[in-house]
Amino acid sequence: MDKAERLPRHVSFIMDGNGRWARRRGKERIYGHYEGVASVRAVMEASVEWGVEYVSFFAFSEENWDRPSEEVAALMELMGVMMEKELPTFMDNDIRFLVLGNRERLSDSLSATIDRMMTQTAGNGRMTMILFLSYSGKWDIFQAARRMAHDLIENPGRELGQGDFDSYLVTAGIPDPDLLIRTSGEKRISNYMLWQSAYTEFVFTDTLWPDFRREQYRAALEEYASRDRRFGKVK
Image (cartoon, rainbow, N blue to C red; front, side, top):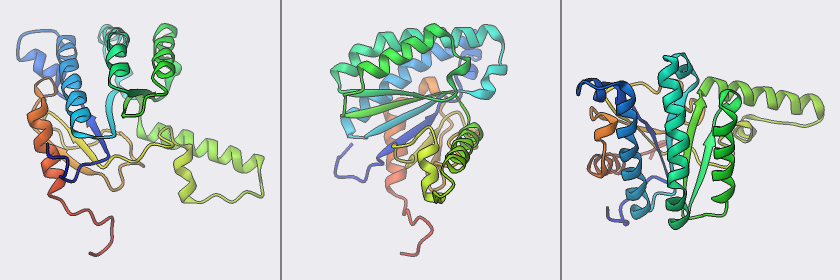
């Protein structure tokens, strides 16, 4: 990727198709999730090389808690193991690691791993990787509205407008995604970053997530670079 090309500052991924990828091979759904880790690694390596500042992944939605308990448990175990395994990579490449979402339903051990990872990588500044875990856009907006209302009650003279709302979202301080890529052919955003994606560019690809590599990533970035972002204005 030519760094002179117009790159998005923040690229986000809805990693879809792991289960279908596994079923086509006669395997359990969780096998697809394990294979999908290689796609995350490929995206991260390419992002570091090409100079993308923020990369985020929709790893597990609040709605995903309704999946079979065995699959949920295996997914949570996989995420904990991979976080620990990738810590040296984050440190060697100066990558900050964040987990955003409703962590109330996470196990104590996974929460402890997350806290440890976030603390140890807090000083890294080359790139930020964000994992959205137990997250939904509606939940994010609701919790932000509650926090904002609480502040207004506690400080009745304070004036807050729409521009202040960003600071109450879990993504406070993080730029909105410029590009959202969803794999597997589905064309919806599935309750993901509803407020933040108001002017996000979308790229939908038929590639299943475990097959997504730098070639598909490059194609999505080239599609993004070809678009004229006007943000509702006339150029």
